[in-house]
Length: 419
Length: 75
Image (cartoon, rainbow over all chains, first blue to last red):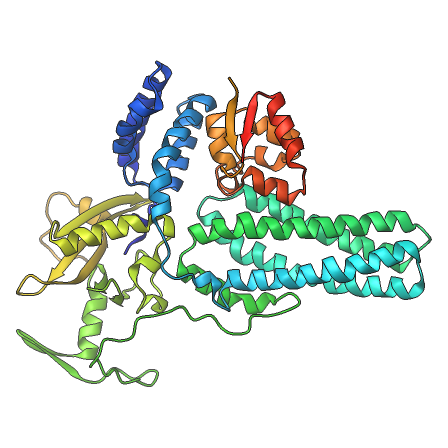
């Protein structure tokens, strides 16, 4: 399904309408109504938007409308009350982040090694050093610190692979703050190494440096595992984690490495499909007989890719089966999505929107749903159709995405060939 | 009457109800929470109990600090 119902793109007119309602509600709160009284109207105003969208609205209420922060914060408490339920309802059926090779799994694996190095070896050697600053123990400390510098890779993967995705979802603050702390830790380790390699009897000073390193490294592990990673799991799609996992090798790992490549669970090809692996460059073989004609697979695929729309088809089990890949695809799709359930292609926090639509299609309450959004010079029209067989049985959903800006711009008539 | 907080509420929730919690968190040494964008993001995952664990603080000190500002901290 498209990024639209991810709510990554903001629907401008809709947002204006919502903001108008929100402002009304703020005024009522201001006039002394209780949270309980406005709750229902608030739910109506923001019904199925995501937390991220609300945050964006709050932000614009403050900056553009000049509504005082305190007022917006009162509103926050209302939306927190309402959203609590819906956020918690979104559960993940299996936990991919606990599977070996998942970037989160790898980060935690490294953290266990870092903890061992810092809390046992470094701690032990630092203690010994304070008692007896022998050359032998100084060498041990230098060795520990050199090993510990390996966490540069752990931090670099976080900063260069994970942070860009969080920033894509509008999370800048924590990434900036954390990057600063990472740099501080790197500098501290290097400084302690330098001080030890030209040791001049400043035992207490170095002891304090080491203690600071141990404390900061541990705090960073805590922040990663309790804040950063849960936040990232809440935002990133499985595809994004796959990309991070694939690019991780280039930067490398710290003190350990994932024992296997992470391959997310995928649905198998439908039975009887008997797809032959064709060698690269060769056109697919075979013909498809339709009620109204016969096309070679090659013709069919090429025709579909020439349609001025992007198609994506998910089957009756919500598994992505096909997408067309014309020249100007509006929302990128990678082959990795084939065989995945559509729920896995969306950030956990907006999955409920997808599920609601599919539920309505399956139950026969709806046959189609349209969305349209303006992104820069494009006007994107996204349509979803429930695909049903002759007997009306649900076979899947077709997503149909088109940039209709040029069509909307048409005026008058054109009856002659272009030059 | 004292305002009441729970240890496992997110800082975002706490500040939403009582904006002055930001100042108290800073006083306790959590300066980062006052930085732009932190409350809306990391603040949704941070709780008082996590903060105490992170900084290895004495829970009673935290309770006392909040008490001085008119808050009661529940478990």
